[in-house]
Length: 285
Ligand code: ZN
Image (tube, rainbow, N blue to C red; front, side, top):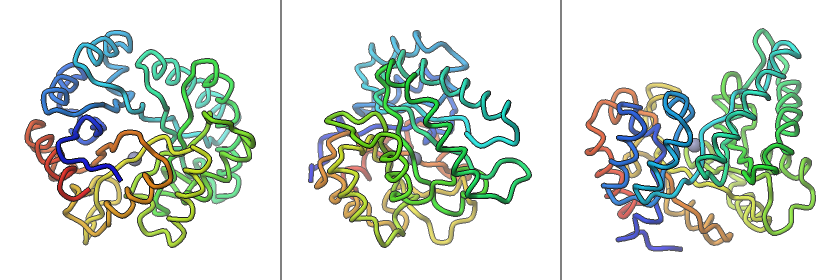
């Protein structure tokens, strides 16, 4: 397992961590000044600016791009809704390529509006991801399925375990070769509880399908389902053990901090949040 002490160049900041307080250019510069090696921007920031200009700013700051967040949800009430989501995701893939992002993170969505049919939502997700593969391949951007904690099955993500995500990746790309086009983004927040986690990490790593590693922490109690994630070390996740398992499986990519924290970290100056991220990455991750 890599030692992160003095190696912030191995670490990335997902810009959601900073609460979108500044335009992307300023955010890029702050992350670079704090010593991190990479950034994972969000679409809202790129849509508010320009992908080419943001890419240049990131390059000039000396940062790599660890990924691009995130997909429009695939399930829809009508065929037209589902088609619109796919087209929107193709545009996001174009932006990911312009940014030089190695992967586009797929948060796949939950039930279609008005539906109680989770199986159908999962089938819609599979069809939607399948519809992106050719476009992604042409751009050289991998599709990173991010399994979501089951508390999000209804509204954010109906892929809820690493096993499910890997099963889907294998159905869509059964013979991946050395550089798979479909993989997974493993976020400790979503998977830490899974009794089968180590086995599925080993499976993902053996197939070289781990595209991203997101870290934060699970707070007890958690006061909001979406925006009360903890800083690494403030909760109950054994982040170091999960990272050890992921790196033992062959992953050598960035360790990316992604914290949704409306009442705490998003209210602090971004320099302060970045400094604490840096310290915790090196001490508890
Ligand atoms: Zn994540």
